[in-house]
Length: 88
Image (cartoon, rainbow, N blue to C red; front, side):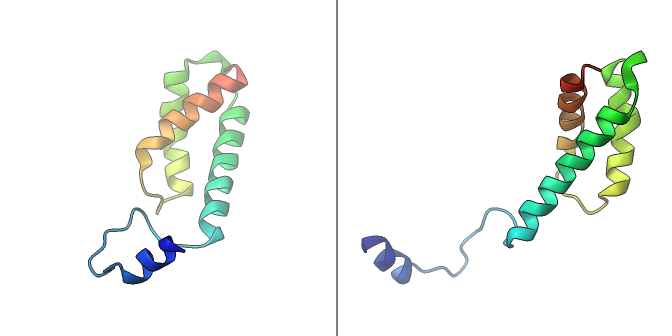
């Protein structure tokens, strides 16, 4: 009950929000991105090259598929994780 009073009395003008507001479509987009990135890493056949070289080859493909994706600095770590899990 006290929380409701606090929220109703809080001055929300100029309040800085973290991230974009949205609905379940954001969670679905992230899940699709992770699944797609995992499939790309696993199917890359990168067993004959280093993980670093595989990431260098695969990262542009992920960027091309998700050109509006924010925080692209997380693509390489995701690829390294999926390549490691796949034993590449």
